[in-house]
Length: 188
Image 1 (cartoon, rainbow, N blue to C red):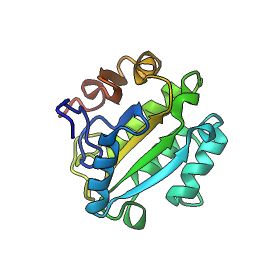
Image 2: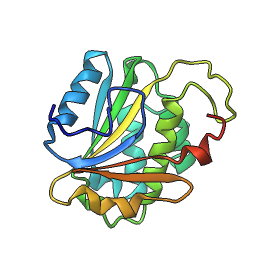
Image 3: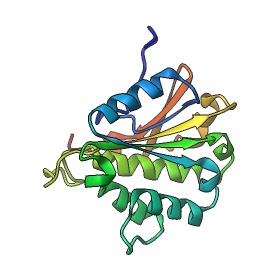
């Protein structure tokens, strides 16, 4: 890995949960390989399928094996992403890689999507529930990587930042997003 400090690690249950960066960045391959070496799983999506909510929900459901009762809405997506276990995660975790994410720059759902993914991943990666009580299951690593072909990641920062919900950060060629923990987990 380069001498540049990398502000994320998708092979560990650590924030940030969502990362935008250039396709071909070696760090993505290295970290994903580390997760797979531990038994984790990688799922690939095409960003063009995220331009329509119905198609996006169907893609998540099909690739991640959501139950038939999946409600195909934002809250149901959070719940199903939080409940990933077993074969889907390898018992360790998942990285969902969204290819061609440039097309999402002007999506009216981008801010909501990133917020929902951060919320779901935070729940999956956390030992405690929203009330601060210990959960009855192990932490499951969950991250989302948006690969960009031409658009610099920094152009996404203002489009995904959501005060009192999601905090984005520009770190070199990457933009990261995570929940504002002061708002979401005041007990930590």
